[in-house]
Image 1: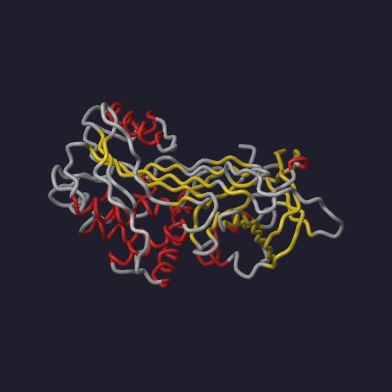
Image 2 (image 1 turned 60 degrees about the horizontal axis):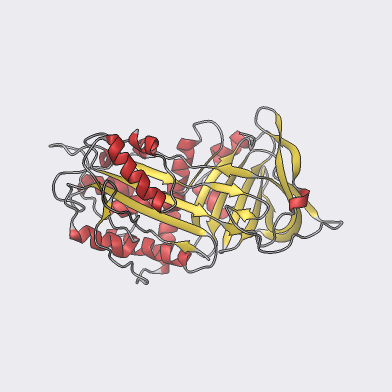
Amino acid sequence: MILVGVTALLAGCGGGTRSSPAVPRETETDATPVAVDSVVAADAEFALRVYDLLAEGEGNFVFSPYGLATALSAVAVGARTTTLAQLQTVLGVDLADGEWHKARSELGLGVESTDGGVDADTALFVREDVNVLASYSELAGRQYGVRPEFFPVGSPSEQAEAISAALEASNVTIDALTVAGSLTEETTAVASSAVDVGAAWLIPFDPARTREAEFATRDEPVQVEMLEGVVPVGFDDAGGYEVLSISAEGDLDFVVLLPAEGRFDEFEDLLDADLLTGAAADLEPEEALVTLPSLSLSAPVANQATFSELGLDELFEPPMSTGGADLTGLAALPVMYLDEVFASAPLDITAAGLGTAGTAADPVAPVAGLAEHAVDRPFVFAVVHQPTGALILLGRVLDPST
């Protein structure tokens, strides 16, 4: 069953967090399909800008465009003036503010309506002496399912302990030391986004055929654990790169963009939102013998630096006489700003499926004459929600052994 929502984290008092009154999330909106498509397209552009920044580093990575954009949108409900303008620019908002929130709410409802395995949570943590406006709680609760959690006034370690405990209560593991490293005694608010994917392949890989095999990294070949199985796929040889799409429950597709050997850097330089979103269109369905590395990836926990590089700097600056965050639609006094947006978006790829999925069906034995596709060199991947086109996860794998 798919459970995608943007829900607040519940915790008790006595050193932990407390919650503002719950506001039921709306179950339908009057957002048009065109508006929802606009949000999905904006998320793809946002995703590629984040991807480009993360790609400046080394190694594998994964993040959730859907989760991060939803968290920033929930904060934008309370943003005003130039802070709101920066959020709209970074998110690619091309709708009236109210229409954007309705369309994003509708997107979440659309993802939630299918059976499968995506669990998404967004939370906002606010210092307990901050007066959160009822109007913000009503709108954020109705459209995003968010109700602010309050953490105690105290040292960063005390604040981090309360926030981490509340996160853990919703099965989001971000340790207190990591949280504390982003807090100061002046911290008034932090946000978090957690997206967990767990969906069985429609036809699983054969566990008996899992083996050690060669993966050609950009530097030298390495031996890694490779899954193998006969699975239904969509495939296209686009010239210079191949596209391979493997379907999972919950209307999810795991889409692999596989550049020719030795051409990953060239492909990554050409990667844009149009290529990413159009890659899986018009793929030829076939049954194929596929080899794919088993993986376990985690998203960057702290994202403030990335968002600041994208041009979203005011949100993370204390309000001054000129400049700094304007969140006056969220809280009255004391004035507030956001210290960090924490994220959790792990991805495990196993013979059974994505994440902690159980096996949905029996593996299929190979027969003569099957097409063969080996994901045995660096690749870009995305987890896409088929009906809406929403980018749930995006990342790259340069070396599965690391």
